[in-house]
Length: 238
View 1 (spheres, rainbow, N blue to C red):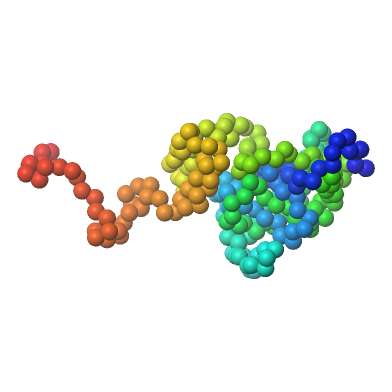
View 2: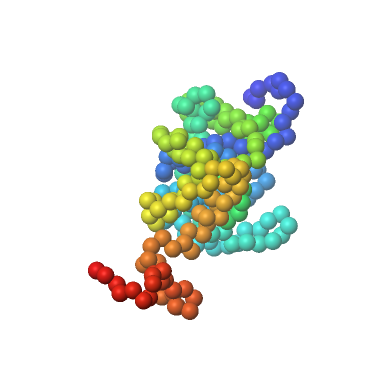
């Protein structure tokens, strides 16, 4: 049974947190949407997954259709095991394999869980109560909806690195996924919303950055040419 409503009934969306078991990420901002027919993983979260997990992405076989009838192709499809854990008793948990469509779209959520996945979990959401409940071998689990704000979604490590989120909020360090030692820092004077938007743009376009000289091979000299700003009348000295 759901608890009695002690205050004004909620009409906000149900946003919970879960764990992506393959990489140990505690994922905040999982949007529960019983009206959707596809599980969605947003690109900004997908790019935070380890390379070995991202390598599981496969080409999509069909386009996605929105409410207005428009169609768009996802970046790809990936299967991840998602685990939900009771807010108060960590022994009450349940997991299932979810086939996500990875989409390139700005969102304050990390992922969206649709009605079929909720059916596999036997989960019952209640917008009025702002929570979901689901059975586990040890009893009924309950997860309350997170408080809403306008900032973009964040991810934290399950076992360590809470400072990673703090780093993102302070100076937004962005790594090159092909070489984690290469980083970009975004000025701390920007607003959180601007920093996160800029972070998503940079993360989505890492393939166009020149990280080292070898990345610039084949550039025609009429487009770009590197010169030393030296006096041509002087003789070079070794």
